[in-house]
Length: 184
Ligand SMILES: [Zn+2]
Image 1 (tube, rainbow, N blue to C red):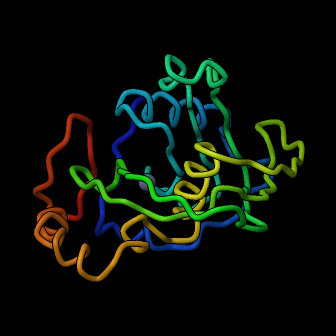
Image 2 (image 1 turned 30 degrees about the vertical axis):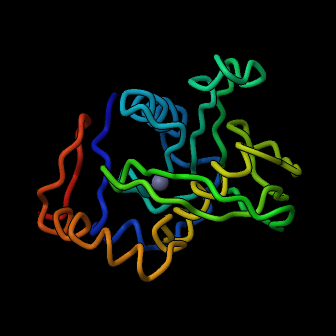
């Protein structure tokens, strides 16, 4: 089922999300819905707060990039209770967008290498060192679980430049190709 995506201005996007336990109701169905919603909106990542739930669940698909990066073929993963333990590596600048910020694309600087812990869909614990594009997507998505969005990482000047677009969202007048839940 495709769910509406919560847009900038929705308080849930600024909450610190909670870890869940293995008895969380209908988790398999929730994850399936998140994948469907993300793929439908052409996203590569989706965090549960973006569908209105303040819990630590994230889906990531890198399959859309597999034409250029064959190693990402069929990369579809759900991350339960993820936490970033360490950010390291070279600081790299890359343009980012977000389904909760339709029409905004800004360059964000992030470390190229991270150490993360999370559980998979079967609540098996993992600890991994991740580099490159996946490390970028994970940092963007896991930020959502701490109430952060990528625009928090841009300069005051750039933030000023996108103020008009943000205000449009706060008025509930943003547009996109997918279903959204705006504040008004
Ligand atoms: Zn996002």
